[in-house]
Length: 178
Image (cartoon, rainbow, N blue to C red):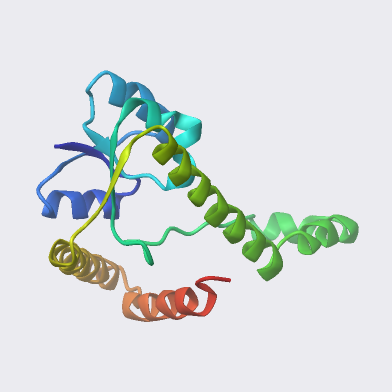
């Protein structure tokens, strides 16, 4: 199967699961699905309605009801020197509109949009299949191998990837459901 994966890491996992990953920007998914360029895609439920995925595909697979297979990060980033060069009133605008409160609001909006996207697929008569526990465990084992490969790659670049993974897991646990 030719599956569009959203990141290099997801594509690595797709290979190990036996799929052929296809890299492409998410806006191209609709046309690629409709023309058979790809057989499927990995996207969050929230993205489906805007791409009209529920009109093209009739089958969806979810990892689990209570968790995802992987977590994506959303970040606002700005060059530090550019930020520091801003006048104080502009820094205040940025500071007042960023941080944990905004992150929580964005997280909630994304969770709500995921629910809506799933409901739209169901209302369209699409079938949603949750992986059986044994298959989900196989995917988790595969994800663990991909993670180990990434850790080795980062270690080769002088990055303490184990610490990054621990911190990411702690933050996910701390903020999950907030």
